Amino acid sequence: MKTRLKEKYLKEVFPIFSQRYGVKNSLAAPRLTKVTINMGVGVAAQNPKELEEALADLTLISGQKPVATLAKKSIAGFKIRKGLAIGCKVTLRKDRMYEFLDKLFNVVLPRVRDFRGLSLQSFDRQGNYTLGIREQNIFPEIDTAKLGKTRSLEITIGTSAKKPELAQELLRLLGMSLRSD
Image (tube, rainbow, N blue to C red; front, side, top):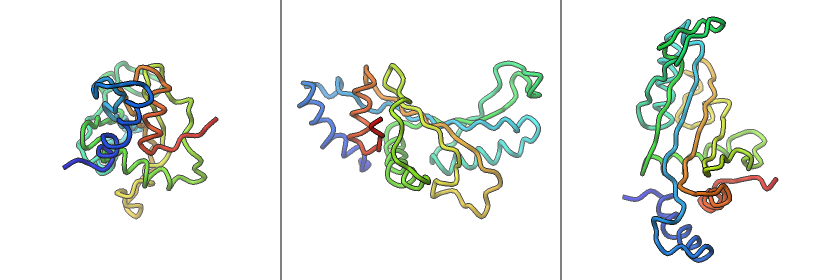
């Protein structure tokens, strides 16, 4: 069964790209490749329970088990040793990616206080978009009564677009609200 956002891409977005840009092959059209969700937990060096809570929250948010990220080098000022778990991440692809983005565009981002759209400055040269969310409790899966500590997370949306302009068009057509700066 196809997800709602994937169905929208196949029925509405791809025909627009083939019409505007002359893309005849479906593999040549810009599409979503992956979504990476990253949550840094710097205090996990002193309190390992914080990392367990972050892993549980990220599992609820993404619907997939995250992996712990390890420190690449020691930093004495932060009391971090090389190889110590200091965060977690998860990479979503295919149907889980489309389900997560549908939830992000239609449920989560409208819950952000004073939301007027996402900035266009967060695109990189390859057409990927990165956004930061300050509190994980805007996701409906997180129970605010059991919430211990609010953590921020970073979401990177990977596209196959060669230019940022094509990625902007793709995400805008999929329903992501972007500011026109």
